[in-house]
Image (cartoon, rainbow, N blue to C red; front, side):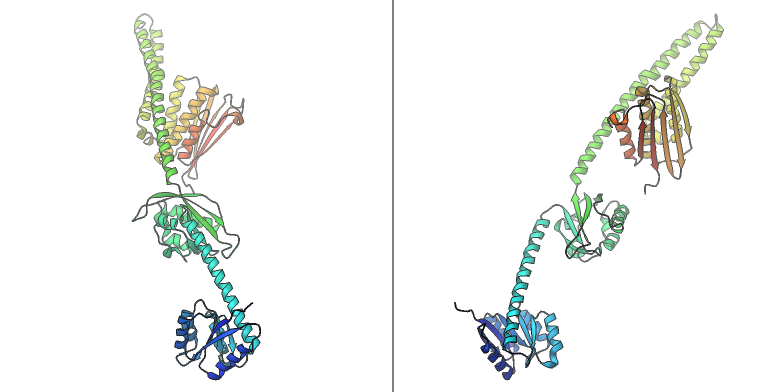
Amino acid sequence: MVQKSIAVLLIEDNPGDARLIQEQLREATEESFGLVVASNLQDGLNALNNERFDVLLLDLSLPDSFGLDTIQAARASAQDIPIVVLTGFDDKTLGVQAVQMGAQDYLLKGDSHSRLLTRTIRYAIERHNIEAALRQSQEEYRSLINDVFDTTTVGVLILDRDFKIVWVNLAIEIYFGIARDELLGQDKRLLIENKLKCIFTDVEGFAHSLLSEYRDNAFDRRLECQVTAEGERQERWLEHWSQPIRAGIYAGGRIEHYSDITQRKMIEASEREKAQKLAAAEERQRLARELHDSVSQTLFTSTVMSESALRQWDTNPAKAHDLMIQLQQLTSSALSEMRLLLLELRPASLTQVALPTLIQQLSNSLRSRTTLEIVTALDDVPTLPPDAQVGIYRIVQEALNNIIKHSQASQVLIQLTWADNQIVLTISDNGKGFDMSLTKPTSLGMNIMRERADSIQARLNIESAVGEGTRIQVTWSENKD
């Protein structure tokens, strides 16, 4: 089998050193070498452009180039060829610097022999080939990863252990409206404070959530955030979550994901709008029933009693007096119910009356048309946000309706307390109760109350047991943090 010759280019201006290297290569027994010699850098670079070589032996002290400038010029023209630098004893440090700049190895002139020279050349070629194969593999892998992540609709950022952004995909550029060059190398924490938080509707909320996650070294916390529209950036909803990097050069860092959930949020908003319309329709029906079942019946009874009192005015004044007292009580009850119904017909009015007053009016209305004993203990509370006041009132209303319909209770206690910027509403009855484990969460109006509580970010707790009544507690805090 014919052994392939290793093509060597030697750039050396000293004829004696050139002859020495030629003799050493000729003495080699394990490899065959073909040597081309150039006496200056320019001739050597011309040779590189015209012929193919396996290795370059380079003297750094040439007539037309000296020192590290020589290795830079050679590297520019011989990127795919391993370079072995030749130095004198006084230039050993220069040889080390040349290796740091990309040369495979260096040899001291006058200190080499045939075996050392040929071994250095062989190892330089092998290391160069290994490095080239590794670079190609990394480029192919990087290209594959880039192709995969750049075609996904999930925005991805990779952070190292110091929260520096080391990789960003195309979706992030689109979602954030920020070029990759402006993101790469940035400390994500500083980027959030100085720039990134400003693209979200809840500016400080977004910053607080992510920085808390970083501070706690937490993962898999789901955060929904709304991006504002500006320039080419579109308005959209994103869901953020992250996972740890446990191995590799970025171990200790994290991969952050931003999924586009705009479609889901639109569906949820549509469902809420349908639910609100349905709730409004049910509320109108309830008011109509209240007018028919309570006020109109009360007014009819009042009319009958007034006619009876007039007939007995002359013949039985005492009986007429009793009827007038009952009539006064009925009309007062009807007036109270009409006031309450008028408030509910104009929802904005529910925010113009103090919450304890609303609850008291509701209690008075129910007392007039049921046998239920309603006891109230209501603290004065400050003016509440409109949504909080209406939400709490509706929960009281729904709870009392459920008690009347289902509990068979004879007594109800309504307590409203205010302390430390927090409202606690408790409604307790002495009714038959129910088994919580056997009751569907959507039954007995519980789902309606939970939705009301969720809408105002309040906590709802329901406790009940068979034969022991039911206790409903709502906690609303002015400070949500």
